[in-house]
Image (tube, rainbow, N blue to C red):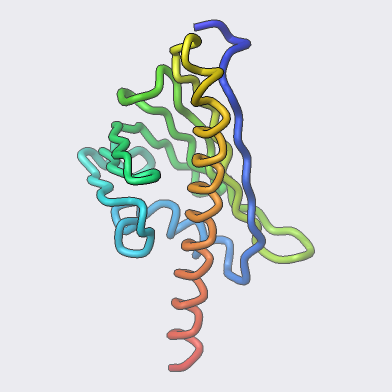
Amino acid sequence: MSPTRGNTIQVSRTLRADPQQAFDVVYDVEYFPMFMPNVTAARVISNDGDRKTVEWEMLIDGAPLNWTEDIRYDRDLLTADFKALDGVFSHFDGTWRVWVSANGTNLEVSVFYDLGLPEIEDIIGPILEERLRQNLDAMLYHIDAMLENIEARVGST
């Protein structure tokens, strides 16, 4: 793979949540299917505390995407670096990052991906990028909603 090929998508969202709570939701990927409609399965097949191997199943526009991913967590930096071990992309990796700013807690996910098929990249590349961006935005939206739901339950007790 040429290092100049591929695409990067980065999305972020400001949350009204504690940074550690936000990181905990990112860490607990096995619960993503419970509150993210397009994630049909996230099976943790290995968990060493700061490292997980996860089998993902997701639907984008009704098309199934399956892959296995290695995730390395850093609780001090509130980051999670992930890399696909197999799947539809020749390259798929990125980082979840949580940090505090003047506006609140920020959650960001950045992804670098390469289909590895330059002959079809021009045709499906723009559509795929749009769908992946929408999917990442939806993931952040659902994480935010999950955190607000947790906060509402904690605040009402």
